[in-house]
Length: 348
Image (cartoon, rainbow, N blue to C red; front, side, top):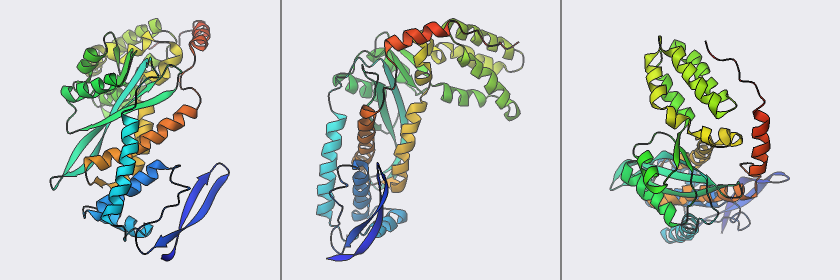
């Protein structure tokens, strides 16, 4: 039996339509026409319903359940929905990685709150993305752990190798503990690029606030050079520039030189994509937009269900978008042109 309607905007290629979805007194109703299109929305709804039915939801989630007209849903209905979505996510996260070689790999982690044994604990959700042989981005996998130590990273990277990950030459990430050693064990000959954005944040933490903007401007000139040789020269020049006034900056730039400049061994046309984790941060922002609705997940399986569904959708969108990286022939012509560009004025 129906109990009125709720308004629901539906984005289409020709604009946004306002749908009237029936509210039912018992169970729940979701139009089949929407189900295949927004897996992540179904996953979000299932997690919200699961938290509600198990009595571990927050007041915000309770209010959301009521606004969606889902109060009458049964535990068996929620279980069926969860099993269906879990199967879809599991298939995506265990699929063969046969699009290689995957020359560039990005790894990042974000924190989520989960209820375990009656307590709320923080867990790390690690996500790996890469560019396949066609120059398109792929989401390779995710894992959840209570600590980001060497053993955790090693197990995660080995799980990707077991599914077929191959050809990795560069891994870009923040300075996660134990990750660099795990990369050396799993990808012989591969380099590690320390995310320049995270590095800058760490660097500026050693600088008085009044000088941070000026220091950041000078450090960025390292990345503005057109060739690898000039990048290295500018790095040395910046180190000399700060020697007297900011010894802590000099120490950090010197110690991290190899890691923050690993990108220079690769084609110039790829530099902007591979020298930071910014592309991954945009993906994390989309994930948080959904997970913030839940706040506290009822269990780890629910965390994987929602984040896995978001990743699955994003992966499919990337496959129909334009290539993320240009072809090798395009790179050659661009690099040849850049050789003619004069080196910007240095710092004296």
